[in-house]
Length: 231
Ligand SMILES: [Zn+2]
Image (cartoon, rainbow, N blue to C red; front, side, top):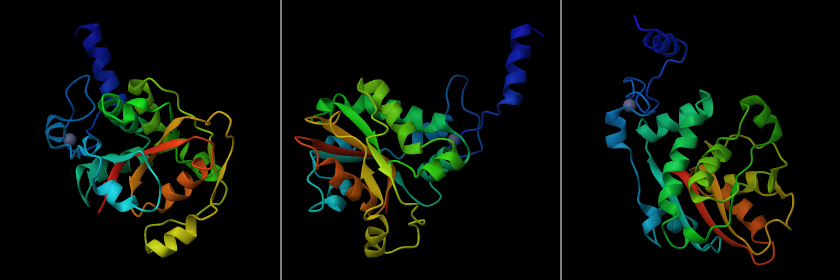
C-alpha cells in the first residue's frame, strides 16, 4: 500500500468523517457535507429580500437595517442535525464552513455589504467553559472570513446564567433574558454598521436584548444574521 494512502486511512479512522447533516453518509474527500445533504441544504435566500420571516418576527421590536437567517430549522431536518453537531458534538467546522459560505453571499448583497464588524451573541462564561467555544462566534468567524471584516467577540457579555429557553413562552423568554447582557465597550463600536449573529432564531428575545444594548452606542446601525430560523 502506498504510504500516503495508508496515512489517509489511518486519519479516516482517527477522525471519522461522517456527514453532520445526516450522520449516515461520508462526504467526498475534501468536503464536509455528503452530496445528498449538499443538494438538500435548506437555504432560505432571505438575505435577498428586505422583508422576510426574520424581519416579520422582529418587526416593531428592533430598528434594523436588515435581518436574515441562512437555513430553515425543522424538527429532524438537516439544519437541526448540523446545529446539534455544532453545539454538542464539538463540530466547530460546521459553524465555520456555513459562516464562510453565507458571508460570501452577504458581502455581495446590500445592505450587508456595508457591514463593518460582526458581534456574536455571547455565552455565559460558565457555559463557554463547559462547551469550550461559543457556536455563534464560530459562525461569526466564518462570516468574517468571507466578508473581510473583524469579529468583535467581547462587545457584549452575558452577565446572567439564564435557564434554557426551550419550554418558555415569548413573555417568559423576554423576562428570562432582560438584563442578562451587558455592553463591554462602546468606543470600538461607535459609528459602525454591526452584524449581530446567533445560532437559531426562535422568538427573537435574545437578539432583542443584545440589539438594544448595541443600538445605545452612538451612530450604530444594526443588522442581524442567524444560522437558522425555527418555526
Ligand atoms: Zn449527509
